[in-house]
Every structure is written in C-alpha cells, then in structure tokens.
Length: 245
Image (cartoon, rainbow, N blue to C red; front, top):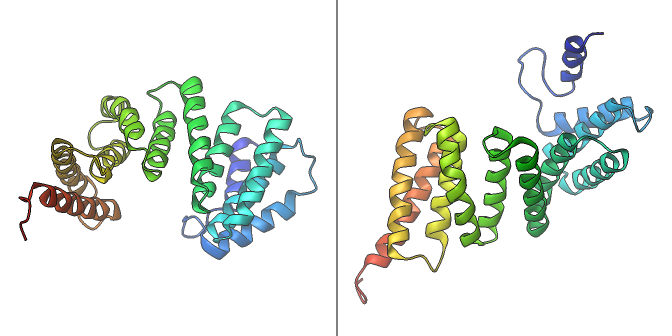
C-alpha cells in the first residue's frame, strides 16, 4: 500500500468515516484499546506498534482514565528514548505527557515537561515556527497556573510580537498568548494599578477581535468576556477610595 492508503486506513481508528468527526469519550477509549491489541504482537521497533501505544494513551485520556493514560504515555516516552526515536517523535510524546500530568494535578511535572518541549522546539524549529509558539503557549500557561506570573510575563513579552508578526492579530494562537499575558497581570496580587489597567485594555482589544473573528457564541469569546469582567472588577476594587462601600 502506498502512504496515502496507509494513512487513510490508520485514520479509521480515530475518525468516523461517515461524519468525518473524531471519536471521543468511551468510543475513543474502546478504539484505543482495540488498536493496541491489534498491533501489540509487532516488534517493539516497528513504527506501527508505537503509533498504537500512542492511540491507546490518547483514548484512555479521552475516556477520562487519566491515571491509566499516564502509565501508557510514560512507557511510550521511555520506549522512544530507548530506541533512539527522532527528536520530533520524542517532543510529541512529551507534549502529550505534559497534558496528562496537568490533568492529574502534577503541575510541577507538567511545567518541567513543557519547558523541555519548548526548548526542544526552539532548537529544532526556531522561534517563528507554529509548533514552537504552541509549545511556548503551553509553557506560559503552566507558569501562570502555578502563579509564577513574573516568569510568564517575561516569556510572553518575547512571544507576543513574534506571533503577531508571523500569524497576525486575529490568529487564535496570538489571542491565546495575549489572554495568558493579561491574566497574569490581573491575577497577580502584587499587580500595580497600571498593570491592572493594561490587563483590562488588552482584554477589551482581545474581546473585540475574538467577537469579530470567532463570533459572540464561540467558547473562546465567552471565556475572554468572563476574564474581561473579572479584570474590570479587580480594577474597580483597587481604584475605589479607601473606606468606600
């Protein structure tokens, strides 16, 4: 079979041939197990066996069996390192693993893994590549989640101009980076009034762009509107005169 036919057949494990939507939930989990059982007997060095292990990990995670998914993904990463897989493959496995670390509450390990992925992407793809900026977005998100706001802000100040230059103001990745930056500003208990005002101004700009590009009903737009409302409330509270009701 040529590569196109092989890819089409493989996609049957993850995508419905009728509606062309990705499987999710218990169906994705069941097909992940079926895929793994189908190729389990292949040699460890066979590419399709590694792909089946990846499919199993993703299916378990989609089916909300995150602890089980974690075991599979850690085994997958260890196998790829042992077999000398490409840096691209290892970064992909690390990225998936970081998501699961975060899902099970192991935030420090998620942060460490995402830092590794970002550094690897910089080395492999350069700072303007989409994969690098996605990795950077994930790393910044982890920093903000752990309230390491100054580190997140420093990273994002370098990334936002790159995303704007490469993808433009309306790109969803640019919007995500700016959203994390504005969130890091107003969530920080030590934020100055100027920083809170900057956060509100940035959220107002992001909200206008998201509403124009994605529409008012889109979940991304809705989340930005919530953040804008919260940031305005924090700013009002800080601007209020002492002792005012």
